[in-house]
Image (cartoon, rainbow, N blue to C red; front, side, top):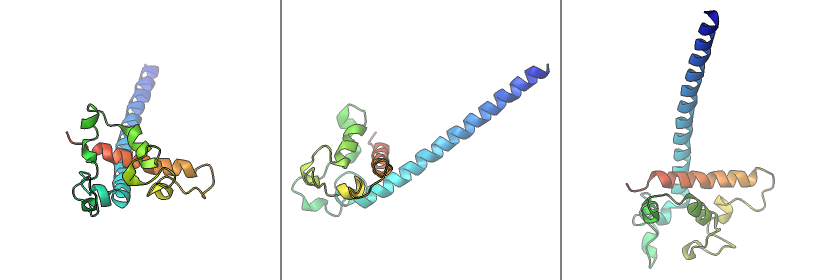
Length: 143
């Protein structure tokens, strides 16, 4: 009888731990989206606009072709958000004429990492910033 009680208590504690972990994951997702939005507003909204539609950015009227509507990325990709493509564009790995050359993307040193910064975590930190922007963009996709 006692071992049954112990097993039940262990099971109950495991369930409680998983609920706490899920709550923590949701908190982490929310925090990541907040950081991503902040990064987006800092680096992308001038052209693509606060809404991501490409129509309400301060600089969007300066282009002959309007900036991409970032809220339609999933819709234009068969309903699946193209995370790796977005990351490649933000990093400067996939050239976009309006973003500058691959050698010097407009924000390459800022978002993509400072090439003079050394250490094993410099690239990881830059990749984490870029991922938060991607996650934020994924969250604003038109339904």
